Amino acid sequence: MGNPLRTAQDRRLPRIPEPCALVIFGVTGDLSRKKLIPAVYDLANRGLLPPGFVVVGFARADWGDGSFESLAYAAAKKGARTPWREDVWQRLSSQIHFVPGSFDDDGDFDRLAETLDDLRVRNGIAGSTAFYFSIPPAAFPLVLNQLNRTGMADPSKTGGWRRVVVEKPFGHDFSSAVQLNQLVDDVFIPEDVFRIDHYLGKETVQNILALRFANSLFEPVWNSKYVDSVQITMAEDVGIGTRAAFYDASGAARDVLQNHLLQLLALVAMEEPTSFDPQEVRAEKLKVLKAIALPADINTGSVRGQYLPGWVAGERAVGYLEEPNIPADSTTETYAAVRLGIQNRRWAGVPFYVRVGKRMPRRVTEIAILFKRAPHLPFDPADVEMLGHNQLVVRVQPDEGVVLKFGSKVPGTSMEVRDIAMDFQYGEAFTESSPEAYERLVLDVLIGDRTLFPDAAEIEQSWRVIDPLEAAWSGNKPEPYRAGEWGPRASDEMLAREGRTWRRA
Image (cartoon, rainbow, N blue to C red; front, side, top):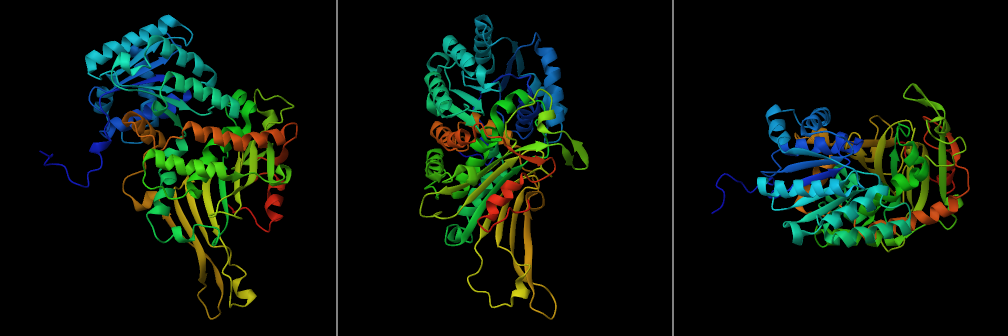
């Protein structure tokens, strides 16, 4: 008999996982404190966690459950998106445990295995466990080997399911990504590996699929017949913060372009899947990644930059070389822009301009579809001086929403046409605020929904795009730009050679 209190519109109940545990390696780190712990609290506050749900933290610290609970409490209260409720936290905190340990200590992992065995009986979680790697990539092999040695990764030994969540960066080039994929797949089966790209958990990114495939208005013009070009921008107004060692070894292209921006490009350019089954969606994204064409001349079709001292939002900002722990002769890029093509019938001849940069005037991530101009304009040239390309802009962050720009007559006695904007904002159109990306992604892991997680083939194909860029850039000095500018002048010149300009984000 069905639940008489449940309506057909209730979409929440099917999204509650079965009883399980979430083990977070590196639980005292920035990612865990700022994102994961608040996400777990918000899920609990929304009633989306199962009875008996357990969080087990593992990190290098000699703490008991009590002192770790204080850290978790502070992190959850500071980062929570939903209203704070002490009763919710008290229920959740009673199921939070901490196991101190080192990744290379067999005894510490034996204690972790014993803790999970004890919780399996006490909480009725049937051994179902997700392992979250909130740790540096260099530690992945150590932890994977320990999970393999103790049998914690083997469902046949523990009962229930076992899943692993791996944060980016997934390798630093194609060969290292292949090796890491093989290592992870040796310990866990491929279907239980969740490679997380938090951008795919953002509501506005998922809305790209709804915008395209749920509306007959956009899909007919989503092709080379009507689209002039596509611009994907991820600009940050901040510098590198405390990530000096990692950032100087990777740079903007490896840090963001290889994952976030190529995933956005794939969602924009992919064909309609037969369904939203995870395999169908990933198959269509992979086709796009395989069809990406690099510039014939990478030196003229791409630009690397590095920020100099300048002003951002009225405050003085140091240059990259003056940042703490950055070598004075570093040639690492903090800005990267590249013109990409997609070799298929839908997008033949349409350039995709992708750019990422730090210390830019403001923080914004957006995807702009610029349409071709009307083939015939019966207006006097003076009437349309202020008319640009029709644009559809998906704002990923901040001010999440969609903007449609088109021409309209200016009120008055003359026929003057200029651009106007129709603006949809999530915060105004819906009463419920958008969940944080990590809320959605953590929930998907616990449920086993891999739709929003790139698979090994996508990761490896993305590196096939980035590696030739890195090889061509090797030994070249990046172009300078001042903090607070929209990148190097060479980036503007790259578009100007083709009669285009960057959209003012």
